[in-house]
Length: 588
Image (cartoon, rainbow, N blue to C red; front, side, top):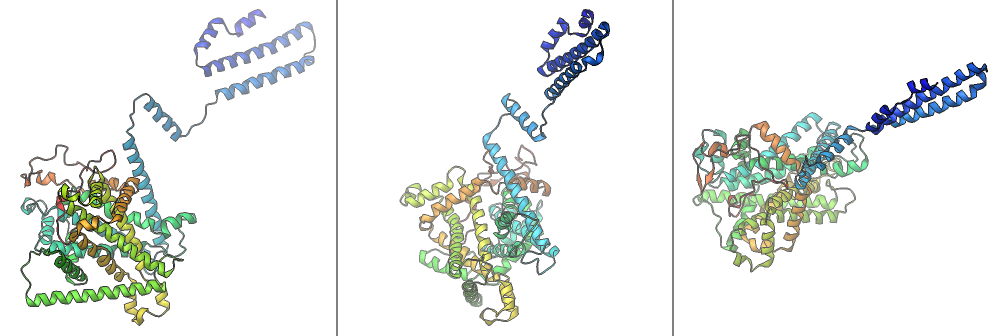
């Protein structure tokens, strides 16, 4: 028996090896040894019984107890050897933190926060686009319920692309003004056509006026395409999500601002030549100039002339004096435009007082009117404050210190990286307010289709009112262009407004939230898909006001260089205040 135990037991050498094994293997070895000991005890019991002549059955109880003890040890061994299940995400996070603890990966907090903001913004954008498309194809938007969803879908994305062209194109036309056109006439022939048309005589100012109305009109139409009808439900989403994103218009705002505005502006800031080297931009220029030529917005020139007389400034026209016929035609358009503005305002106010607009239900009519004018004022303030700030950027510090509030506001805008953050935040605010104004001022077509028309007009004219075009006229003139004229005429007084300081901080906070950070990622993808190159690739670097020869001084980082982004997620290529001209109507 001793020999059997020696053969089947664990030797001292094996015990030493077990001690050197990891804990799990050691437990496995001990369990195996315990199992062998139980078998040995069981074998001894049967051997002893056989030698003594006793019945093996008398020992069944003891053997059964040994079997139970053996099973318990085996179960404990299995539990001990079982490894915990981990998901891939948990394993990845643990591995990431292990590498960080060993110094293999160094975390830049600012860059990490910027990436997180970008991913969150991208997620919100994808979700917003998804629910808008679901609402369109389920015929739960204002336009999709009247036409086929396919046409509403195509029209929606055409408007988004057109808005992007307008937003980026204006910056390109303004930025290329100082550049000699012969530098890019061969490499970018369509860009040459665009700049030749826009920079001729007073066409730049005319383009800005017409383009501003076109932007407002496109936003009104986008709102009609994607604005959901009452009690809309899509994708079986919870009611709270539908109300927050779809019914309130937040999804429309995010999609329009990120895709239709900021993405284009990022690329247009550094790829001016490539961006407007398309006939689509040439088409946009002609449409904008035609809108201004129609005289629909000529009432703004009346305000311009009044403030020019008050301040003693000239309008800065490069054209020769108008002839009598031209003068008559000009003032006739001014009067017609003024009449259109008054009529548009009357129709909008009548619909607001009657409660027959697309204003959210439950809001009293009087409150709707107050909100309407407050929003017009805020849009105008944000449009004008940028003009006033750039008008004061070159004012001597000693003169600016005389007006402490104006000085504080200017320092807040132009300090550190605040300028670009303010411009981005301002763009978000203006677009959001425009969408709200579009919703408030657009007439409720369902009501007027079943009731008397406003002011007793014909059905055809009432359908024209329902498009929201009159609200676009009011917003363009009263909520934008007039404020720009006031800001350009009285920049110091404009920047002394106590609300300006609050608006600047609001814009900076919106930009810092990162809600539109995905525009940088989309701009990167858009740049490479369209194969845009930075302007220096074609024209070289501009030094001391002179353009270097073509091909000289090409950026060392190569033609595929993307706009540099610093740790805070902003572009290095900030807006140059020298590009903004001190005119009565100044481009934004």
